[in-house]
Length: 252
Ligand SMILES: NC(=O)c1ccc[n+]([C@@H]2O[C@H](COP(=O)([O-])OP(=O)(O)OC[C@H]3O[C@@H](n4cnc5c(N)ncnc54)[C@H](O)[C@@H]3O)[C@@H](O)[C@H]2O)c1
Image (cartoon, rainbow, N blue to C red; front, top):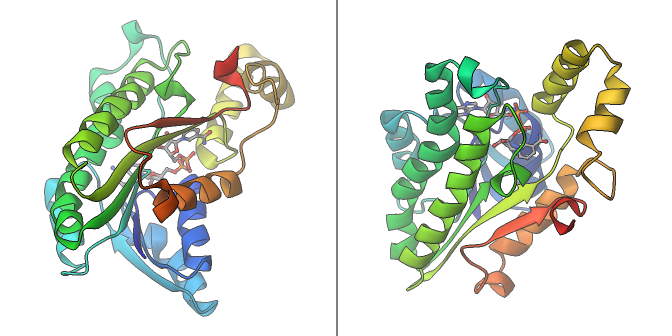
């Protein structure tokens, strides 16, 4: 399979790209700057994997066009829309340009990327799109209005594209993890510790993991296995879904 991952320079994207490379697939690691993904791709190649580093800003239509055209007729079989960022502030204090940026990266970006790869998937009669949503695709938390709105919107986009592509073996799904220990979350832990004047361990225990009955961070290995299943033939009728990996958060 040919797999393209956005935001693959760090965290979940990097982990998913490595997972697919290690399972014998050809992977395109893409991120804002080529330098963000060069080293990871080179390291995978030294392990005998097939990995390419590509500059791709998901908010830029030109950048998407250049990256997708470079893949040629063989195109991409599995698109993982993963790029993301966070900003925490009450709506009244949320800088409007920052609000727009979060939506551009996490909602419009996946739409533009999907738009670019779907014709090729349709032509070849096979394709999988997996959007990296969040527990915040399903529930809200205060001060995360842009993130929650973008991630909820992603579920709507997923359902629409699933219906639009149902006439071929293409599926579109969103995975919705609770907290995964990545640089994005580490930054939130540090910020919340400062805001609340408590230790980082307390932020993890009493704020982050509190809503999860399993009380544990989600592992990237869990997400890798889930995406691999969604990409398989056995999952050809699973489409338009938002799949929670949330340690029981939404079961309560
Ligand atoms: N970490 C978590 O707990 C968690 C939980 C649920 C969902 N998610 C989602 O997983 C995804 C990855 O998050 P992460 O925790 O690995 O974050 P991260 O900060 O470690 O990585 C995000 C990557 O996205 C890239 N990126 C940002 N803007 C971009 C743009 N315009 N174009 C291309 N790339 C861009 C960044 O450069 C970075 O490499 C995000 O969509 C996030 O919302 C994370």
